[in-house]
Every structure is written in structure tokens, then in C-alpha cells.
Amino acid sequence: MPDQNKSRSRSIPAADAAGAVSVTGDVLAPKFGDLFVDCRWFRADRPCAPNLEHGNVCGSCNRYEAQSGLVLIVKLGAAGDIIRTSTVLPGLRRRHAGARLVWICDAEHREAASMLEGVDEILSYDAEGILRATTLEWDCVVNLSNDVRSATLAGACRARRHDGFTLDERGRLLALNEWARYWLTLASFNAAKQANRLSFQEIMYRILALDGTIERPALRVEDRERRSVGEWVSAQGARDVLVGINVGSGARWPKKMLASGQIAELCTLMLRARPGMCIVLLGGPMETGKVAAIRQIVNDARVVAWETGSSLGRFAAMIDACDLLVTGDTLALHVACATDTPTMLVMGPTSAAELHDYDGLVTKIAVPDLECLTCYSDCDKPRTCMSALSMTALAGMAIGRLGETVPAVDRQ
Image (cartoon, rainbow, N blue to C red; front, side, top):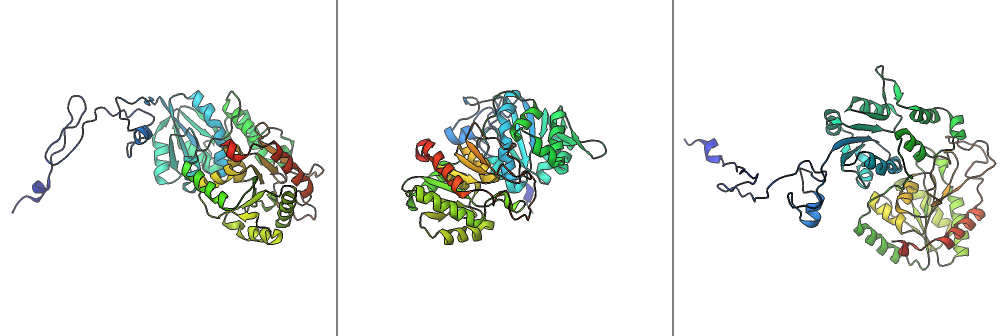
């Protein structure tokens, strides 16, 4: 009886002195020379970006960048928090020149992290990702989240330096410098939140002791998404400008955004002032009913509904196509900052000071005479921070901003 193992065996290609692989038997292996596994572009399980984009190979590639360090950023979610925190990436890149920047997040938010400019690798917060994060030795672990789950992971990682938050030996949250302690204080006491005058981004820069101007988040939006959204917008018959209204605010703080009747009134006033306007109502699956209610009240073909359940990339392309966005403090705000979309931000239960305006890109609107602003609650008062806002004033401000705005088609 023949030896089955022997009959199935194949010769293994051998490497020559130059590192090239020879051809033996029925194994075909082209000779490409060295593999620069220390390059920040190297991926091991798939071709790198320079190879995919230009056919580059190691040894003759002009994109080679030696990896000289490892930095882990722990920001598990949510998508909006990931995007707003990414403003620290340029500063980290300058500080850790040549390092590989790795971001770990919840698996459901990988799309947001994968769109960030300046991140070399994404890990999911699962068994595989946690194993990798806790096995490697990092030059620096950055955790700007003051929750126990993130701090536990950060503390479990071996690193020459930790920034932000970790745990002490008894499992208690540990702020690693005075600015991290300041952020923890804001999270602990509403009075401290109300007294604070620094933006989230300013505080994060101070925690990390970063220099330079605070930069907007930077998202990679695929050209195919932009083209597809552009075709959708054209099909809506927009004749003048396109205004997006993000109608939702998430389940945690429902009063972070205007009610259906208020948004309908705002639409009516803006359309009356600028008849060529098209308004697109943005929202996810939770806002389907609210969008339908607004359209029923307005009853105007110039108010259209954006598709629910779209990818984050497509949602970003839609916001980028808008000449103006009206939103509450939610994901759409952070996407608009990343796409350089002029934004009208209605404020109430969350801190206005913490939201960076990026030199006027974001106009913040709140009722000034309410002492309970920044309450971080869902109150049942008859007059709330949202219900007290004047739609006439808001519509006037929106039309005024549109007069200053370069149309989106010219911004791209």
C-alpha cells in the first residue's frame, strides 16, 4: 500500500541568498526579493495600500516608512465619540513620528474608526483584539475614556507610558494627571459641568499635553459614496441650496433635539424665505416615525426623507453634500465637523462649552435665560431648553448663514 502522506507531499520552495523564493515542482512562487515587515504600510494578511494603489513592491517602493514605535488608542465607542476624539491624532502623530497608531473600539463601531485619517490598524474589542492589545509592548497607551471597561483594558496593556485613565491596584479609576482629574470631576458633578468653559477637544489636548491648533476630525469618504449621494440629491430636484436637518438625538437624551412640530415649523419658515431650497430630513431607523410626521405636517415636496439604515460612509457623504446642517449634539454634529459642513447646533441638556466650534464652523444656539441648561437629564417641565427656542429666530439665523456659505458643489 503506498504511503499516502508521501504521495500527497510537495516540496517547499526555498529562499535564495537574496530572500527570493525558487520554483520547485508544481509550486509557483514569483521572486519579489525582500519583504519590509517593519514598514507601517505592511499588512501581512493582504496587500498594502501602496501595492493596491500603484503596484509597488518592497525594495523599490517610494512609500516605505519604517515603523519606529507602537501607540494604542483606547476609545471603544460610540461612533460620534470616536470621531470627536480623533482630533488628537495629528498631535499624536507628531509626537510619535514613525510609530504605528492602533485604535481599539467595539466591533459595531469599526466603520467609524476605519474612516479616520491617520490610523494604521483597527482592533475590535473582542477576544482576538484584547489578546493582541495585551500581548504587545506599547510605547504609549492612550485612554481618554473615564469608564471602567476602557480603563481596565488600558491598565492590562504593557506600555512604557500610559496617558489619560487606567485603574489602580484595587480596581479604582485612576486619572493620570491633573487634566484627566479635571475631566473626571466634570463627569461627576453637574455644577462643575455648568461652570466649565473649555471644549472637550481643549481638555483632551491638555490631558495629552499636545501643542498646536486643535484640528477638525478627518474622515475618509469614498468617492463612490459621494457620487451615489450626488445622484440621489439630483433626483430630488434641488434647485438652490440643500439643507440637512438631523431630526434625532438618540435614546439617552431625547430632548437634545427639537420636537416634530418645531422642525416642521422651521422647514416652513426656511422654504418661505428661500423657495429654491431643498430640505433633507436625516435620521436612523429610530427616527422613521418622526420623519414621517414632519413631512405630513409640512406637506411640501421640497422636504424629502433620507434613507434610514445607510452606512456611516454614505451618511457622511450626505452631510458633506449639504450646504447647511441643523442638528443637536449627536453623531451628525461630529460628522459635519469632519466634512467641513456649516452647522447650526441647537443646545440644551448637554454642555455647550464642551462642543468645539472650529473657528465658527459650528453656530451654537441655546435659550440664555434658563438656569437649568447642561442638566444632563430628560426633564418634564412645561418649558424646556428645546421648547423655548424660537423657530422664527432659528430660521433667520439659518438663512443668514446660507448667505455666507459657499454651495457644497463648490466646496468639494
